[in-house]
Structure formats: C-alpha cells, structure tokens
Length: 426
Image (cartoon, rainbow, N blue to C red; front, side):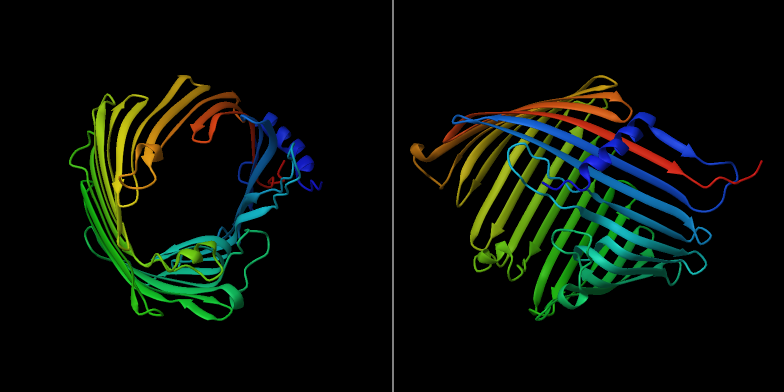
C-alpha cells in the first residue's frame, strides 16, 4: 500500500504537538509572516455484529497554511486540505489527498478592491459551489459594492488539479447596496456551463431589513432563464423580543431543483420538479438555562405532503424532546435526548439516545411497524494543549440487525507554528 504522506507527516505533527506554539519573530521585523497548522487524528473502532466482529483503523490528517505580509501587506496566500490516507486494518482503501482551499488574495485599500485567485468556496446569490478561478469585489461608493467571478467548478474529488472552464465553467456578477438604515438589497446573474453548453443561468435578487437586534426579515428569489421558470423563492424571518432567550424563527422555501445529467439523483428527476417547505421554531430559555422549544415543519413534494411537529424541554446541559411525523407516505414517533457536560476543564462528556417507531406506509398494519433505538456515549480528554483523546461507544438496535455495538478510540494531535523573518539587528 502507498503511504506517501502518512509516515512522513506524523513526526512533524508530534514535534508541533510537543512544542505547542512556536513564535520566531523579532521586534520590528518586516517581510512576510507564515502560519501552519497540522492535525492528525487516529481512529480505532470495533463493531460487534451478530454474525462477526469488524475492526477498522484509520488516520485523518488535515492541514492549513497561511502567509501574509507580501507586497507591503497587500498580498496573502491560503492553502488547506487533507493528506492522503490509506491506513486501514481490514482492507486496502486509498483516500487521495484533497485541497479544500488554495488561493492568493490581493487587497488594494486605495480603491477598496479585493481579488482572490485559486480554489475557494463561492456563495453569491443562488450560487453555492467549490470554485476554481478569480473572484473580484470592489466598492463603487460607500453604499454600493460590485462582485464578479469567472472560472470553473472544482473537480468532484477536490484534488490538487484545478477545474477546466471549458468543461465546468462558472461565471457571474452581483451588485450589493445599502438602501437605508437596516435595509440592504442585491441583484445577481450567474451561469454554469458543461461540455455541451449552458445548463443553468439564473437571475435573481434579495431584500433584507433589520430593526436593531429584535426583528430581521429577508426575501430572495431567482428566475432560471434557461428553463423559463422561477428557480427559487425564499422568506426568512427572525424575532427576538428580548435578550432573555426568546426566539421565533420562520422559513418558507419554494424551489424547483435541477439535477445534473450523470448525477446519481438524476434518476429521480421525473418524480421531483417542485419542493415547498415551511418551518417555524419558537424557543424560550431563562437566564438559568431552563426553557422549552416548539417546532413545526411542513413540506410538499409534487402531490405528496409530509410534516413533523415536536417539542423539547431544555435544561442546563440537557435536552429532552418528542416529535411526531405524519404525511401521505409514512408516520412515526420519536423520543430523543442529549446531554453535554464538562466535569473538568480538560474533560468533556456527551451522550444521546433516540427511540423511533415508524410505519413504511400510511395506515399500515402493525406487522409493518418498525422500531429503531440508538445511543452513544462520548468522553474527551485534553491531555495537553495540542493532544486530545476521545473514546466513544455506540449502540444500534434496528430491524433485521439488532445488537450492533461499536467502540471508537481517537487520538487527535494538533500542531501550530507561526514565524516571521528575523530583523538581523544586533
């Protein structure tokens, strides 16, 4: 098995974990500054199944590297991702290295302009995607900002190869403005290409209003010009009458999902063309942490409807709740609870359990009822500032597979180093 990064990186992680934070900077030193973080987590798990036991061992390593201070502080760089991992005790499974972000950022303060070039996460209007390319933003006035982007969607596996704009092109522009006290608005246009042409080209806008910290409203919508229909309409509202933990949140969403050709979900495109959803949540908590929460959810997919109504009792470190699911296809009940407690500064405890009973079809006979009970207990110990040990036990009791017990032990090593060039004086 190939382990190109695993064994070479572990000594570095250990060194950083022992040293903690290293600062090599002299007073008055100029030039670029560097910061690096590396986290390695080793998992050892055992599953006790009715037929046989299964053991697994794996290592997950993530890294982050930042550099600032180039070109008189105007240029910086960012790189993050995970290293390759193929350490498995039971079988050979190779997980390639991935790059989550990797871009250069240029800030021109005089013109209030910022440019990011490389891999980044793009969230503009109705576009949410991992993006490889150029994102540019500039302030035209004190109240108006213009943003534009051009490039390609990142490859599916997020490897170190950038996407090809001729195969997975992504382009767009957005203008954002403040219309008055607490009022903002924006308009956008976006385009997504594939090898055979344009597959998505929405135009849209949104308006938001906020009154101090008590009330906020937002309405957004987009129209798909390629299909000549509304793609998405959404309303968000949040009311916080006081600072004593009372919150009322409302959401309504009406969208027509577009499933790409070749996607696994494409097989459901003939059954799903419109989805509507309404959600309301009311939470009230006293200064001592006691309170309650009520939530209602209603969704419509084509001619099918489903919903859920539930409530929860809140206490310090504790949450107990009940939810009832109903609809055209299935009904069910769920009782759940969770506990979060920190006995010591270096010791954290978490536990939870869910008991569900449901029917596969509405008005089904008792023979078609199913029950699932799951629980977990997790304990974490901070052995050092950069070393954490986690132990977790999971149990699942479900139809056709009861008595599933899993034990997980994880060791997390986190190392960080930052440095700047020495001044060279004295």
